[in-house]
Length: 358
Ligand SMILES: NC(=O)c1ccc[n+]([C@@H]2O[C@H](COP(=O)([O-])OP(=O)(O)OC[C@H]3O[C@@H](n4cnc5c(N)ncnc54)[C@H](OP(=O)(O)O)[C@@H]3O)[C@@H](O)[C@H]2O)c1
Image (cartoon, rainbow, N blue to C red; front, side, top):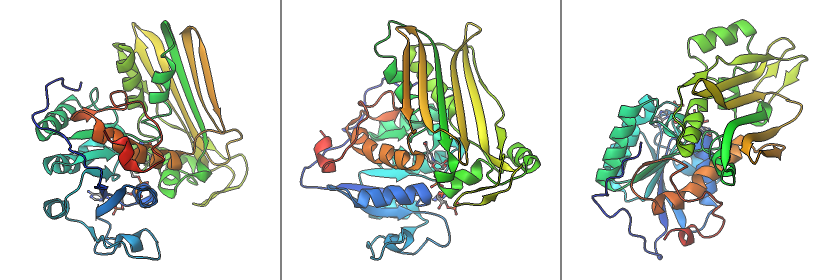
């Protein structure tokens, strides 16, 4: 858990005349969309970009983003060198879902005195699965006086933060069930790929088994975050193998054609138990042309609460917004490895970004 030790440094000293300076670390589909969103905002600017993809390294970021102008920022695969030459306030980090993979990248940013907002799913609540790595990041962030946050639409908001906020008017909470039902055909190609779109059932099972595709990552983290917010000590978290959803007719997505009988997407379920009783259930369902899209949270307690977002929240737009909107919250936050339940109440930052920074 986040250490309560006092920071050894003053974290950030904001000067209103300055713009917030961002380094984009990972400019794939989501990192690229975040960079474009930042370019449209006032009071914030991109001063550096890191990526390892051969086709991006050495090119101007404007070209990598498909813009018709240069931005004067060259994509580098050498973050160490960039950090030593460029002054920045925060890194927006979008490279991988797994903490052991991103750990050295996060550490590098922290050691350069940079705050971090990352879309790494396992960073959104790493204290249960990776207590040692989490505590090392937290300690280092405290030492360097910076904040590290993992966020996104899910994990980061729809299944965890929103559930937590919805419990606020409850005197008692007995059970929480969250369902995300989404049309994966509207999502970015890496997402459609990782949920097995277009594969045969046998290919899906084989690729999941060999971790060539991952399905959704983050149900474990969302359950851990809800439990931590409620002070629940869970006996265990059970994550079931994702089940393929088979197309009942020929389907088409911007990624691929899905013949009838092939995989249109998947269903993933995870459950948290306390005193041998199921207390949290998360249902993640994503497949091409799902008949109804929604995000639903059902809380049983005193009182019962039932919230449903009709039409659901678009995952990619939502992730981009969660990250951009988190930037001022992170700059304002105390140092350390924080989670969405620790930072200020999430909200949109629609005006000049500087006004949100204390
Ligand atoms: N929490 C959430 O709600 C949420 C939502 C959306 C996405 N995500 C996660 O965010 C991550 C990025 O998503 P995406 O769709 O943008 O993936 P992507 O298109 O594959 O982009 C990742 C980019 O990072 C580069 N990269 C990989 N390792 C790197 C390293 N060590 N240093 C610098 N660059 C590196 C990749 O290069 P190569 O292609 O050469 O590897 C690629 O260009 C994924 O893990 C995704 O699951 C989370």
